[in-house]
Image 1 (tube, rainbow, N blue to C red):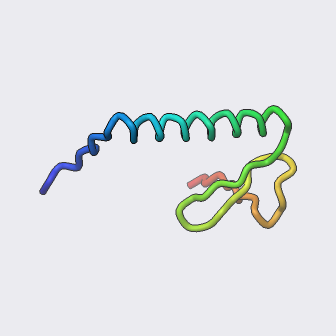
Image 2 (cartoon, rainbow, N blue to C red; image 1 turned 90 degrees about the vertical axis):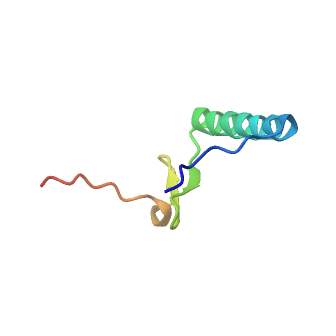
Length: 66
């Protein structure tokens, strides 16, 4: 089997990635401070996090006690 390796990014690509990560981080923090909900993707469907999130987008949280 081949081992998965992380691709080497060019300096320009790394700078763009860092910029995007910073922008998303700042936006999520701002929305958290304002008490707004955020929508994320879990790989299958969108879901919302936050007290004011629409009911149809809230992720169902269950505690499995087996």
